[in-house]
Image (cartoon, rainbow, N blue to C red; front, side, top):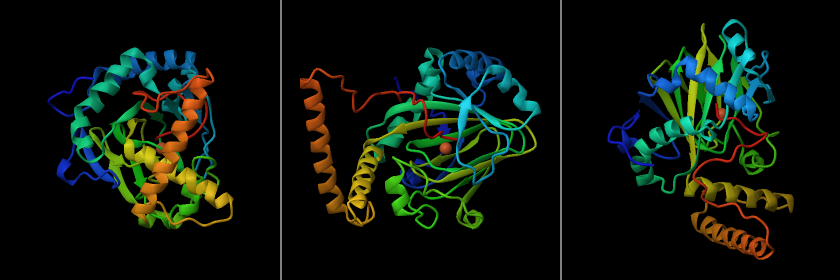
Length: 303
Ligand SMILES: [Fe+2]
């Protein structure tokens, strides 16, 4: 993971805030691995390991995410049909892992100045037909979403916009996404990005988002990662989810920094003790700071 001199992603890093949505520019669209031929070859390799998925053709902003297995034939038909396909966790492919590393290594020093501990890297490529909607949802990772081809209108809401997704829904998010519900009036609260090749956005973890394609095929790639802060927030929301199940309404994550710090220390101690117990018991223990994301068979899709 060597650092390159020229970042692939361009923005005013002095204005970069890890918990704020921001427009970016990039120079990844001209990369040889993001041309259609190599992407189709990648799709064949990912299909073989179950990481080529498709979303229904009739989705609208409020549709619940239901991804199903796709094949390369369906991907090739997207240019003439509707719906979209996603090449998931492209970093499992040795060739595309070099792309994920090149892009994220090129911005890692700038990111870690304010958001240390980058880990669990991943890449996702989305091929979307014309006039196709990516339903309203949110994801667990920080996400640089970059347009490679075509046009996409991306709506993103701030990660602390409780009028769009409530604190209760955020606490429940890691277990069930049933409280994340679309309402048409949300559009007025969104950052709206009209993305063409070379343009993109930074979406902090748990920023609600939704996308609509234009008149032609759209190709987008997301570069995602966790940090110390994303892990901390996820653990705190999980703790608050359990507290709510006990009938107690906890304060919002972030509203009481001292309480958050004490809670996080307690959860970290419990997690550490459980990991030691598993190790003593001879059971496998996943690394906390794995450099690359482990592909999930189901769940959210950073789009
Ligand atoms: Fe997403």
